[in-house]
Structures are given as structure tokens and as C-alpha cells.
Image 1 (cartoon, rainbow, N blue to C red):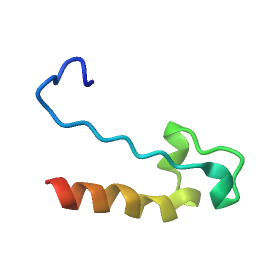
Image 2: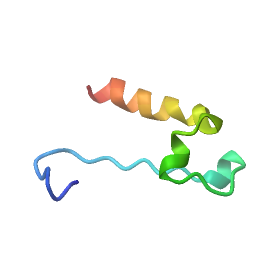
Image 3: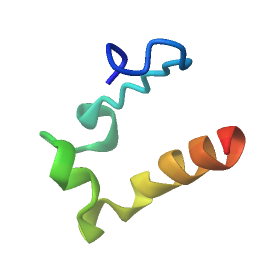
Length: 50
């Protein structure tokens, strides 16, 4: 996406699943209710920049 929106500011937030006691999370796994504790990362980011 950064190649398309070249004028936008990009941020990458890396989450290490092992630090959360998980083997993996994955893109779709992030949105699973079993990982709902991660959703605050997304809402905090969106509230800060929107």
C-alpha cells in the first residue's frame, strides 16, 4: 500500500506472538475473538491518527 499512497505516513507495529504466549497470530488470526486482547492496539492507533 505504501507504493500506492506515496504521500502518506506509514507505520509498522510488530507484535511478537511468543511474547503473548502464542505460537502464531497471522493476519486473520488477529481478528479472531480468541485474540481480542490485541484489538486495543488497533483502536489506539486509529484513535491517535484519525
